Image 1 (cartoon, rainbow, N blue to C red):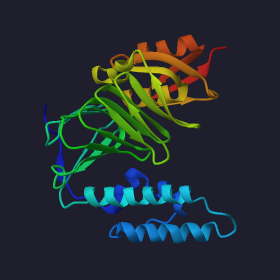
Image 2 (image 1 turned 180 degrees about the horizontal axis):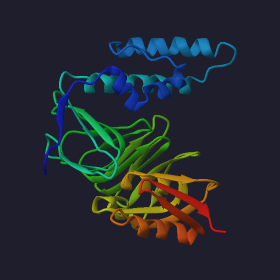
Image 3 (image 1 turned 90 degrees about the vertical axis):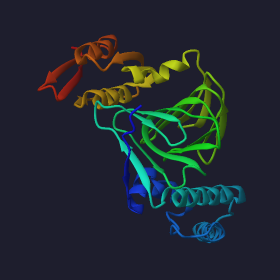
Image 4 (image 1 turned 120 degrees about the horizontal axis):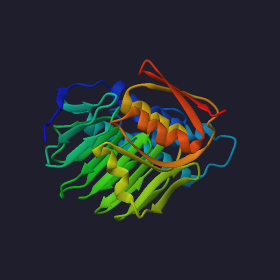
Length: 291
């Protein structure tokens, strides 16, 4: 495969934005320790911060430990990725990229996605930061960790798909063994299983058609009981346009569409759901309820 990586220098602000550390740190009173803070100092800071916030109520020690572990993880991740030499791959609308990592592992990056890793540290610590969606074919070796703002994924050698956008997060295991960790919950996944972040926490599901979660590599996008809003967001990413809609609510749908024909894709989504659509200037789609 062609390696599209570029050697760049990113700022701490860019890394923080990508991983939404500020959002994670809300559990610790919205305080983010400096990047040079040691693990022991970070723990003390979090304990003091938590004690201050909870001065009027009894503090749950287990909760404090969870918060401290999250802070320590973020500091460690930042230290590893913030090496002198980094590689960053990004994709635009309607674009996919294939990347060969230094260890021989392969990554397929979906549209409007980004991965960052440190070339300097990769041989010792296989760590990738992901925003968006990617399929990983990982060579066996030292532990391989994928970090996202919604959770982390640890693997030894496997094929898996990781999706992390805004508040949506799910991981499907095609082969091998995967550990998914949100900081509050974790699950071990075997082939045919997936973990998904829901309002009730991280849940594990068994799927008979797990391989369909990675069909997007061939230009086919499969959704099972997913919100219509999320499906139209995928249409936007794959066709580089804006979908305008109202009153879709929490309606769910199981559907698959291709990124080769816009009209056919809109038909398979809209017709079964009783929706109509209008294409304006090939850059805007207006979706409405059929009258």
